[in-house]
Image (tube, rainbow, N blue to C red):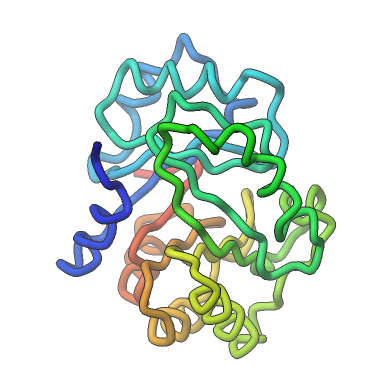
Length: 230
C-alpha cells in the first residue's frame, strides 16, 4: 500500500511544491468528471474532496467518479463524519485547533471512529487553523468558531506549534472558501519557520501571482477551489 504522507514528506524534502484542487461534492456533477479533470492545472498533485456541508452519499459518488478517471491521489477533506468513504485514498483527520468548539476539536473525530476503525484509508492527523479571510466562511458558520485575525501572527504560530506538539502530521491554514483575502505571506513564513511538519494553505487563491507568492513564503501544498485562473 502506498504511504501518501511519506510521499508528501519526500516532496517537501526535495522542495517540490504540491498543488491540490478541492472539489465540493455538492457542486460537482459526476457526468462532468472527465471534463473537470482535463481543466485542472497540469501541476496538480492531489485531489481533495469535501465541504462544510454535503448531502448524504454525495461524497462517495464524487470520489468514485474522480477515481475512475485519474491516478492522482484523492484525499477526503471532510466537514463531518458523514463524508467518509473508503473509495478515496486517504483522509485528512481534521481537528479545528483554532476554535474552542469541542464538537470540531474531538466530537466529530470520535463519531468517525466507527467508519475508520477498519478502513483502508490512510489516516493523516491534521491541525486545521481557520484564518480571517475578510468575510464569514462556511467553516466559521458551521463550526460556530471564530477565525484568528491575520494580524495575530504569534497566536497563529503558537496554534500551529500546539498542533505539531500534539501529534498532528500536517498543519492546514485555511482562509475559507471564497475568501477575499488569502493567508498572508507573513503568516505563512512565520508558521513554516516554526514547525517541522508539512504546511498546507488554502482559501482565496485566485491568480498565479498569488500562488507564486504563497510558495515563495513557504507553502508546501497549496489548495485551490474549482474556480482557478490560467
